[in-house]
Image (cartoon, helix red, strand yellow):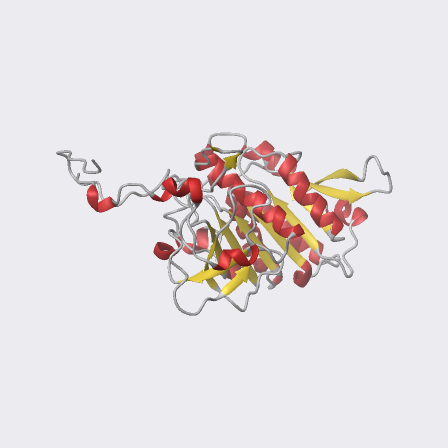
Length: 346
């Protein structure tokens, strides 16, 4: 039943969703550049309102330094993805975690610029990243240390973070301490050269979480450490005794939930080293001596490479030491039961 016969020319290996759309150079007008802003999240002593937002233009370093003290503190830059505003509940939850860690929290407000067709939004990642990199370079002259600069980008935000880090290095000769990509966007980026998207050279440490590699994410390893959660393509989900389909968008945004929960369970998201993306897709990583690593914040960058990260289907998702045993997905095993490519004849 898995055999499909169709008299047509073989179109080759599938390229994935919207693989090519970066065939134009896109820039921002001076007016748009002046409109782009960052949000500084400042803790308060008000119990009912524990923090406040302060908005600063990207060219206004005085505004940032008025509220941020860089000495002895990590500055955490957060960049969301396509059509995600700064008031997103998930983003706010991540912000709260970083405030508990006593970090400066700076959020690039990408929504006003990226709220347009996706291919155009993808082309805007480079000019947005360059503007952010210029701000961070200016702040370096005001006390910001590259060794205390970390960035987290989700989806398109991962590539914005990459371009920001490259621009920061061009202007300062220094690399940020860490860049984390949460299911970096694949559409429009899959066929680009390494330097045109997130890659391991942009920071001293680069880690990546993959949760939807053939849909909205990207299959290729991009960092020093790449976590492929449940194989990286579809994430399991159960509500009561019912399977909830968690396909493209659901799996894509799940990277943020894993990342958030890893903050409060820092040693529980245990991953197993794997030889290749082909093997990690199906969790074939348990033969021989097992190499392990853990998802943020205690990722071991001395253990680089590809890692298979199994999870449960319900929150808080982590398996702890049970993740070191090869297992099935349970009721979501059907996600691995698609017809093999060799059974499809075109």
